[in-house]
Image (cartoon, rainbow, N blue to C red):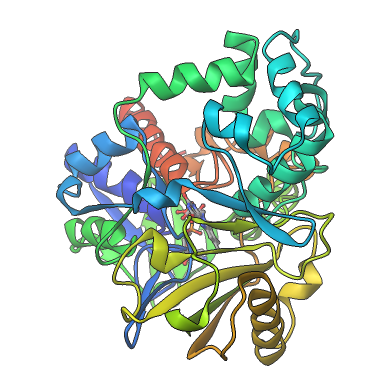
Length: 443
Ligand SMILES: Cc1cc2nc3c(=O)[nH]c(=O)nc-3n(C[C@H](O)[C@H](O)[C@H](O)COP(=O)(O)OP(=O)(O)OC[C@H]3O[C@@H](n4cnc5c(N)ncnc54)[C@H](O)[C@@H]3O)c2cc1C
C-alpha cells in the first residue's frame, strides 16, 4: 500500500496516476475538500479564486487535461487578457506585446528598447548564485529589471527578486540563455514550438480540475484527516497517526508544504527536517473588490496591473478578473483581485481585514479612476503562501530525495516549480518514479 498525505494538486496527480496503473493507494488530507491551494469559491454572484487565478497553458498541460477529460471544459482567457499594465510614474501603462508595439510604445524608454536589441548579442551572463535581480540587470539593464521583472516576480512568487535564485526559480529562463545565447531569441523560438498556449481556467473555476481528480479517487480519498505524527512501525513499515485513526504503510509520500513535512519527520531525520524548515513562505492577503462598471473610468482592457518597488504603492498589483474570464460577477459590475504583502512587504499582509479593504479601495480608486464605493469586498489570507526559491531553499532542494531509501518520498510546489502546471508535472514524475521502484521494500 502506498499512502499519500496532501491532496493538493501534487498529491492528487500522484495518486491518480498510481491508481490508473493498478497500484493500491490511499490519499489523506487535513482539509474537508481536495485541491489544497486551489479553491474556487462562489460568493453569491461572484466566483472568487481564493488561490491560483489562472493557468498558463502549454502542450504538457493540455495533454494532461485531455487525458483526464478536462480539455472540453477549458475556458480560454479573453483575447484582451494578453495585455498587461505596469505602474510607472504613478500611472498604469500598457506593456508592449510584440516587436511593433514595442517600437511605438511610450511605456519604455529608447534606452530600454536599445537594451533589448543589445541582449540578442550578449555572451552568457549567468554566474552561480545569481539572484533574479542580478541576472536581469546584466542581461537587460535597470529599466526592464525594475519595471518589468520586479512586477512579474510579484505576480508569480510574491517574492523579492534580490533574494530569489534565478537558477532555482526560473531554470527555463537560464536554459534560454544556455541554448539560444539570448532570452529574446529563445522566447521567440519557444513560442513557435508550442501548439497550445494562453491563459486558461474552467467554467467552474480552477477547482473543477481538482474536483475531477478527487472524484476519480473518491474511494481512496480521506478528507478531514490531518496527519499528526509518524512513528516507526513493525516490519519496516511506517505508522501514521491521523486525528481519527492510526495506520501502517510500506511507502509514505508527503505532498505537503516543506515546513509540515519537516515537522513530521523531525524525530527521525533531524538534518532533513532542519533543511525543510528553512524554506520561506511569506504571507499574502488577497482582497476581492467588485464595483459598478459605470463607476470605473479605466477600461480594464487587460489581464491586470502589477506594481514595482519604486512606485511606493500599497499592493503588489491586481488581476482584472471580469476582463479575463466572463461570468465571474454580474454583467454591470467588474471584479478585481488585489494582492498585498509577499516577501517584500510581509507586514502589510497582516493588517486587519477592514484596513486592508480600505487601503486597497483607496489605491484602486486612484489608479483606475473609480468614483463609487465597492459593492462587494472579500479578504482571503494566506499566512504562508508561496515557497521562495531563495538561499534557504537550497538545503531542502538537496535533501528532498534523501529519505527515499527509507520509503519516504517528498514532493510539492517546493520541489519542482511553484505553478500549478509545475506541480502537475512534479506529481506525474513522482508517480513514474514510484512505479519504477515497484519492488522497493518498505524501508
Ligand atoms: C495565493 C496564491 C496564488 C497563486 N496563484 C497561482 C496562479 O495564478 N497560477 C498558478 O499556476 N499557480 C498559482 N499559485 C501556486 C499554486 O497554487 C501552488 O503552488 C499549487 O497549487 C501547490 O500545490 P501542492 O499540491 O504542491 O500544495 P498545496 O496546494 O499546498 O497542497 C498541500 C495539501 O497538503 C495538506 N496538508 C498539509 N499538511 C497536512 C497534514 N499534516 N496532514 C494532512 N494533510 C496535510 C493541505 O491541506 C493541502 O491540501 C498560487 C498560490 C497561492 C497561495
